[in-house]
Length: 384
Ligand code: KIV
Ligand code: ZN
Image 1: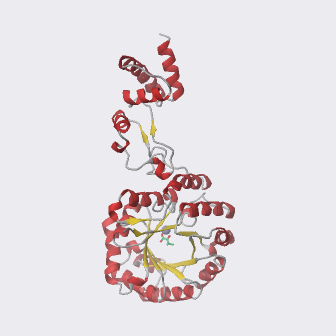
Image 2 (image 1 turned 45 degrees about the vertical axis):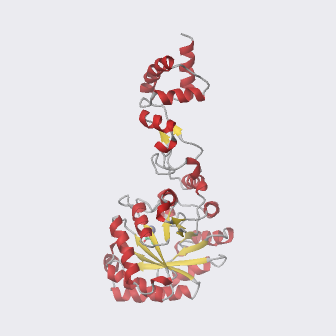
Image 3 (image 1 turned 120 degrees about the vertical axis):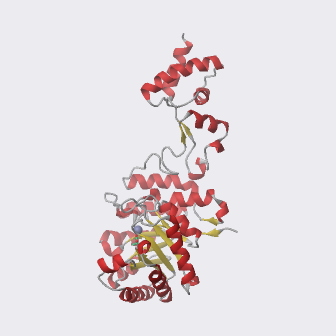
């Protein structure tokens, strides 16, 4: 039987940190409702101490959304934890996400302290958060560059202090997949109380490896993954929800599943893109405009013979209506004939050959030939 991987969505927190993408409370509630429909397990709704608006958003999302756990971020300081707990007061199931830097770079250059003091602060913050809510997640910031033995010590300490989930973020997107997977493996092998908590993955995409790193971590036993829609987030962004979810679905041999209603992926992606004013790159995996578009003659011919030749998932599975055959100067006769038939024009081979040469002349000028062009081409051909 497949094991469940929890989907922790941080579109409204890490994703919303993107400059120019800030949302009002009402907009955040709309996105949160759609995330609930999508089936995420946890919604990270904001960082309540950061601004009154973010505080209000966590309150309103807690009231409006009842199914997923609502999570609020805090640093490992009591004021932040108080604000997070207050903002979560209406949540059916609330979680405080607190944490501190774990790499020597952060310990020395951000906190100007020692590893020992970091462990003390981590334990104190976890216990304090635990006095407010039952569900406490601890993040070991910059774990991607942290010393492994120290990281394991920190993880063991916060689990001992009551953390229910421990997040191992590759905050700077530094790791390679094998390296990140190795970190998670090391933690499972060297933390004595590991069975008392869920290990969570949180990867950034600075080297374009966020999804690969997340899958490497999951395959080593992590059972929560932190993601955003369309991969939005700080700098080069976070791991994309749609990529991890569909990778697990397309590869059932991994024995892992999520509770995501995949048909809601595309509508949610569109909503987030519009509300956050973040256009989606055309070739973005799963949700980009070209993700199910076939434009070269060889691919179109193969796709028209059988969709499996060039597609590893059905567009309908992610909420996209249908695949697209784009007619360009790289298209072949098969695609042209197919589109003409859809438009109600049926031709013998010799006629298709002739029409194809005329089509190429138009395509070289127009780049993309649309249905109106084809109708005009057909009518001109018929009148000769
Ligand atoms: O990238 C990171 O380390 C974070 C933490 C605050 C969880 O976003
Ligand atoms: Zn992050």
